[in-house]
Length: 507
Image (cartoon, rainbow, N blue to C red; front, side, top):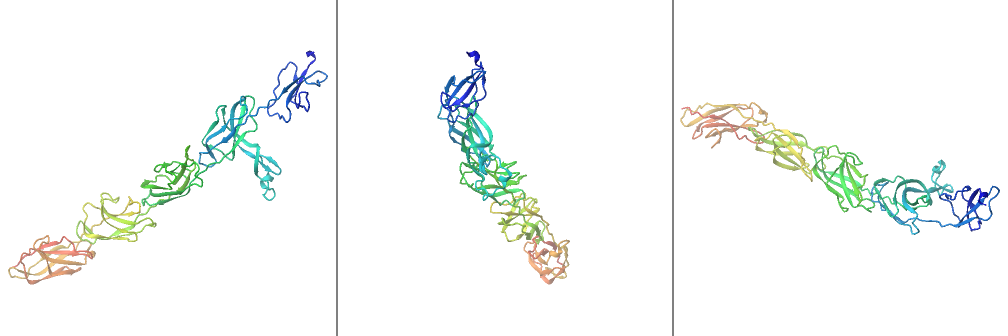
């Protein structure tokens, strides 16, 4: 009687006789010998699938066939994910799980998603908040935003899959986690992906250092040197090292590493003096794990400590050629908080080339006594280098030396004592051609040569500036003297190179 069958009807049923049956799909035409049961068909209490034949008039009352349902349930276990990416909202590490304990013969893949659980609003679970939900207060709706329904997931975002036999998948560092909270692992057969996954709440391991500071002690413009410091992150979980850089932005663009990676008990980094700042604007400090260095650092704005002496002045009071002496003066810079000393040098240019030290003074003293008779040699500048507890700056304050030469001109003597071996009369001279205002007095000597050998004061010795002659008493014994010497004297010192006039004994 097969020619009388027009179709088949398929039901879920509690028994082989078709009790408590529930139809599955539409009728199946005759001559078709299989049917796809839709994925996610709810089994409920049904234990069997029953098949009825159907004629043009009616469906039979006793099923033609009954099949015992064998429901396959395969869910992974013990999902674990240690996050080794130390940036908030980024993940990195290995997601692992144990395979299902049930029959895995139908499982072909494990599929991983990012998701968040549904939320409870106004008596129901859901993924989308209404305007009214957004305006709720905790008092008006105590359940607002409560998490906990782990059967309905929201915003599932596919990450990847592995074939059965692999029990882990790698999330590369810097994988964006956005606003998700969980990792889901689904099993998949050739037919369908399961709807109820295993899940893992992610502990997003953000680990930024805190309170980055820099105590700059390199006193040159655009040079850095000092101590970069920070405090440990709130959580040190999975942090293995610190790394510090100079960067052109707060997020680490154009960065250049300072030194090497630091161990976890190091919270300071010595930035070497004369580290060139270039275009860098920030210090940035990263934490690193066994997997990777974080991508979002902590930072501190670079504030370059530039401190150089200001308004140098020097009035040479040593009146000899190629010798100087006097008081060098300067002013403190606006910020001298890191200066401990000022070092004073003679140098062959304003940058301090081939310099020789004259001495130093502690900060708070803004003058230095350059000793008289200091030889200029090839030196052209006085330079002052500020020094901190770290180092001496490399770019000094500089002052061009003006050598004050003030020697008398045209000295002369006419002997008025006509006795042989005796002299007396006026010694005369003209004022210096420059710097006469720095001369306090003129000093007259008799000497046995023009260089001043065997000299002795003569003609009153010290003659005040403005007077250009001195009287040598008659009957002054000529002895071995051959010259009169006239020296200028400043408030600092008498010059060492005189102007000489020969003694002529008039008989």
